[in-house]
Image (tube, rainbow, N blue to C red; front, side):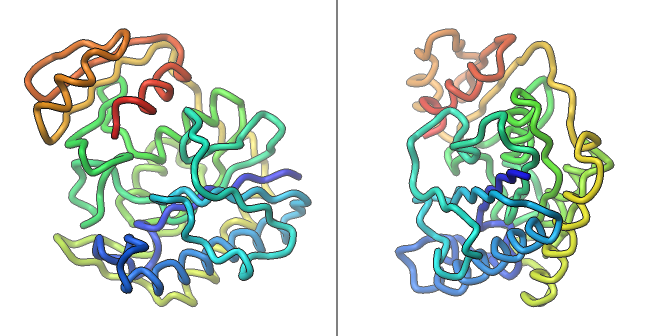
Length: 266
């Protein structure tokens, strides 16, 4: 069984401030260590479920946050960025049997995490088919293109609630809850134990139940924090400027949505 694990940091237990997510800041060392522990636990759960090939994508910021020596020997680690239109799922293809998302977080515009955002802090809101989009949703649609199921997600409660709304069968572990600019987190060791057990449970079951249908058409709306970005990115082929801070994009191909993001979410 070949499993893909994508890891972010804003949804890791205890991580609360932007300083903790920035490798240039000393506060990040504890966050990176816990991110690594949660990813290692996900790997261990996958191995318990029968995985024989593990691919891990370090999908936060520079892509160089995970401590490779603390991962199981069976894991391959993808660091930094290609970049590919698959972004946080770089290296994914249809040979994988399941996907695990660790440390994911609430979408831009949500009030369920002090670190809520989608892809970049420059975006105020990002909507796909009139649905506020998180990185979880984008990753799930990428996976759906390849017919690879997203089986498990861990992160803040707001993100886990969104995952359950999209697919009630998906296994989730909420490691913290955002309250205003603060978080309430479970103990790091408890998070590790729950992630290990949750991943094992998800991958031992019928993985087909985790597949979600891919919409036939995609209407994308991106509202930026600053008007000059909307002006600049409205020149991307197919994009249209809706108002001073918003562009739109329509296509029947979700790959084209992700390709656009490579150029308009900086």
